[in-house]
Every structure is written in C-alpha cells, then in structure tokens.
Length: 398
Image (cartoon, rainbow, N blue to C red; front, top):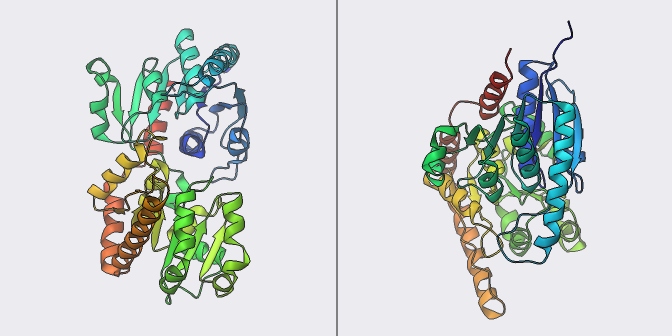
C-alpha cells in the first residue's frame, strides 16, 4: 500500500517579516515529524526564494522541501494606475497557485501574510484545502482581511486583535502569539559578543543594538549618525544600517575614529548571528515591526522604539509599539519629522533630544532589568511557533 505523504504549503513573502516567522513554524513541524513535506509559495521576484531556501533548522537541514514562485501584485489602499496592472499579476498568481496546489495536493495551507499569500489562499479555498492564516500585528493588514474569507482558522498574536473581526468570524479566531525561530530561545550572549569581537567590553559600556530591518530605516540611521559622538560616549553602538548608501555612510572616513576605538560597529545586515547579538546587547533601539519586537522580547531585552508612521503606513507599528509600551516593555520616540524646511529641522532636533533623554533613563540597570522582564512576561511562556505547528499538524491527521 502506497504511503500517503503529509504535505503542508506555507505561503507569505515580500519581506522577511512575512517569511521568517513562517519558517519558524516550518522548523517546529519538522521537529514533530521529519516526514512532513513543506513547500513554500512565495514571490517569484525579489529575495523570497533566497531567504526561504537558505534557512536551516537546528539540525542544519533545510527548513522547507521546495519553493514555488508565484506572480504577485501589491495590494494598495490608495488609488494608483499600478493597481490595474497588478490585478493581472494577482490573477496570474491565482492560476499559478491553483495549478501547483492541484499537483502537490497538500492537506493544509498556512499563510504568514503579505500580498503574495492571497492568491494561494484563494486557490486553496476553491480546491477545498483548509487554510490557516496568521496575523502578526496588533490590527489585521489587508492581506489577512482578505485571507480570513478563505480561512478555517485565523491565528492572532494578541487577544485584543479579536475586536477587529466581525461576529461571524469570532469562532474561527485562535490566539497563538507571534512565531519566533527556535534559535532565539537558545540564543547565546557569549557567542554574540564573540561575533562582535567585544568579549572584554561587557564591563565597560553597555551594548546598544540599533535595528531598522533588513532594508534599514533612513530616519533611524540619520538619527544615529547625528548623535553618534554622544552615543559612543555612553554605549558600544552596534548598528545594522541595511544595505546601500546608509551602510557606505556608516563606514565612511567621517566615523573612522569611533570605529577604530570599537565604540561603533556598523553592519549592513546580520542574519545567522542576530539571535546571539540580541542576547548580548543591553538595549535595543529599533522600528516596531512585530517580529523584531517578539524576537527581542523572547531574549528579555528592553526596547526603545521609533515606529514607522505617517501617510505611507497603516499605523501597525504605532499600535505594536503602544502595546509593548503599555506592558512596561518599551519606551517610544514619537516620529514628528514629516514636513520640510525649518519645521523638519526643529522636529529632528526634538527627536535627538528625546533619544538622549530616553537612553539616559535606560542606562539605569534596574530600570532596564525590569523592562526586560516585562517584555518576556508580555509574550507569555508558550512558544508560539510550536503552538501553531500543533494546530497545523493536528489538521493533517496522524
């Protein structure tokens, strides 16, 4: 008798924020049963394929067994002629997903969000394949709102997020928390200091880790550059700038002296050693993307947050930051630099003053220790990726 292969399709992409949490779930599924086949449906353009195929679990094995590239159009909330062209990409993504789902015959589809996830979820609904979709942010994004129409279960990071869904979907909602890769729970501070080459610096100055995501954050980078002399008087600054011109600025001759003194350590991007670097640091200054927040919270790190805000965002980072601040796990810098000219210069000066004031407060070790404990307590004791893997594994039978 031919053995039935248990297969789960994971989908999501566009950014690491939609990919790495999904890979955390994939790793936990493989921990439960190495025979489970996991195929990832991601964007056919961009870095999705590379991020997915290069990821390894704790055994050093690939997290997934295959990658399928899907044409994808961006889901915009505003009028743009590009929306018309992207409708054709979305339709192409739907039929591509339909073809591969019929061929692969998975027992379930798990979506981690992003615009690329909508066509596979819609195709799975047409084929009668159970869909499970996860929302990492405090309020649901457009992709989750669309995917929720196709989903058997809607998985949420926060209890309060239930209020954003209509009454008819309440029975489908399950609060799981936000999945974090297993390596963050096992992060080694000594290994992080060795990676940074600051093994003997622990007793001198605290380590300040500055993050803006894999692509960087121009506003944070400019704030660091402007205040670097002050920062390096009080901290060893580990700065992930993102790739491109900001990294070139960070390694320019202008900052050579602080780099030579090992007070300023710029990197364009840290991946494999990031869990250990977070474990080694004393304070994290970053945007407020859900995944970075949960990764830092797992490592019990106090956070200073500058959430992305303004017309180009739906406000999810502002909501995420407010929730962690409300738990006593973070302080928030308000982003006010939205205008040009003298007003913008004044706002940037105010932001610099706020940065120094908040970091001075966080130099108090007891204050930071309490914040770190609050961060760990806020996300609970359960491992979210494990909880989601249990739900998915239960859906495919034994």
